[in-house]
Image (cartoon, rainbow, N blue to C red; front, top):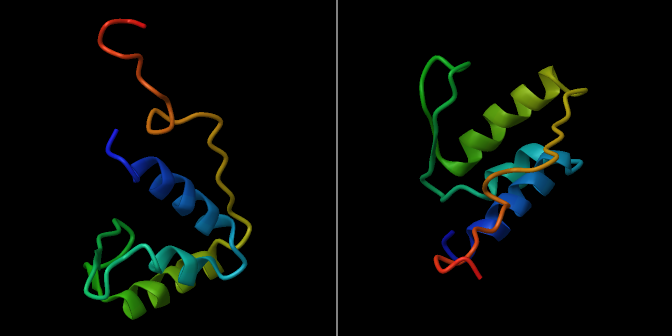
Amino acid sequence: MRPGLDNFVKDMDKAWIDKRRHEAIAEHFADDGVLHDMTSPGPVTGRAAIAEALRAFTNAFSSMCFRVPSSPMMMRRPPPNGR
């Protein structure tokens, strides 16, 4: 796994439970980032627009929660020599 990817996944998980989750999640995007969501009519471009789209989504599904008991992204691979 690339350095920092483990922290990114953990930070994104934390963002989903943040009180202002739409802003916390949008912070993971570049200023000109693009969100592709199958529930949207098309891509959403720009951090502010992404935050607004996520606000609408998280308000519509305010009781939604995620539980990830384990994730392949979080698991450490053994070294190639098996030690």
